[in-house]
Length: 171
Image 1 (tube, rainbow, N blue to C red):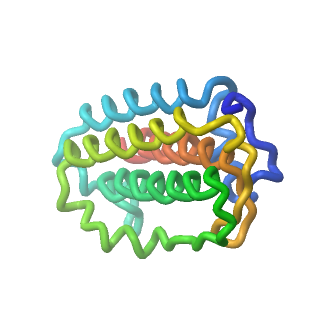
Image 2 (cartoon, rainbow, N blue to C red):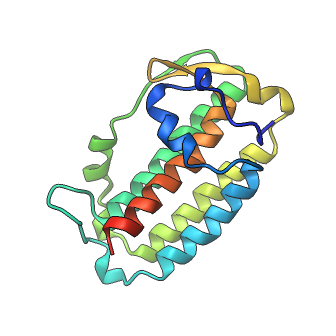
């Protein structure tokens, strides 16, 4: 079920870019590969660059990494609720309010790497252990319909998007 790409009717239009960044095939294998590659990428960065911004007003490297972590927590929580059949309209979250409240720039890159790996491991445990019937369940989040399958793909695509931005703009 997870190797089937979500149909556009399964998610809000603003998630299309994230889902498009995920390669076809086994989503669990993609998430596992991303975990190792992103952890290695973070390890390869000098910690002194964690507060670097490629442009005034943009998030720092540390803020971007913590945004990926925070967002994955939100997406996987939504995934859990929807996969379990919860039909409550789940609220959105204000990423721009989360970033300054996170104090990410005070963290080391090593601590962010460890937290990313822990959160992704938790997401993978959830995904690996859901029944086949869970993936087609739909709910609402942030005022839009979304499937459990789409949320799993959004986790992978959101991470891919921000790691690409880090590699292209934060050199």
